[in-house]
Amino acid sequence: MVNQVATRAIVLQHKTQRPVQFEITQATRDAVQAWIRQAALKPDEFLFPSRLHDSPHLGARQYARILGHWVDELGLDRAGYGTHSMRRTTATLIYRRTKNLRAVQLLLGHSKLESTVRHLGIEVDDALEISEQTEI
Image 1 (cartoon, rainbow, N blue to C red):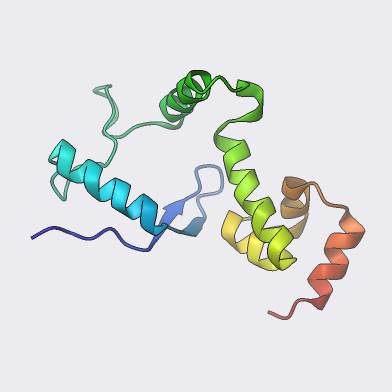
Image 2: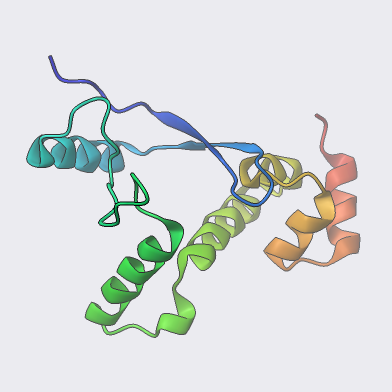
């Protein structure tokens, strides 16, 4: 029996140790399922194991290096693409579509609204005005 990839996941933010939930799109679920089959992974194994003996799973630095190689292979400027900028792009797109600062704050796992405002690069007055208009 093949395990299905969930539509959502929760990870602990490294810096704050706060849980952050995110959606896993259908295309991503299909790709992950294909990887699980190709790598013949068992349920108790990490999706992306580390090459190092000290760590059972791929670390943030190794992920950043892999992403950097992909960016290079595509002929793009590394300065414009990184693990943090990808996270920021998603948050910015959600904010632009919804203007819901609180939703973005929750998705990013920020405890302070000011952190979300800084992350998005929007003006504090605009952010506070939108936040006051948002019912929670």
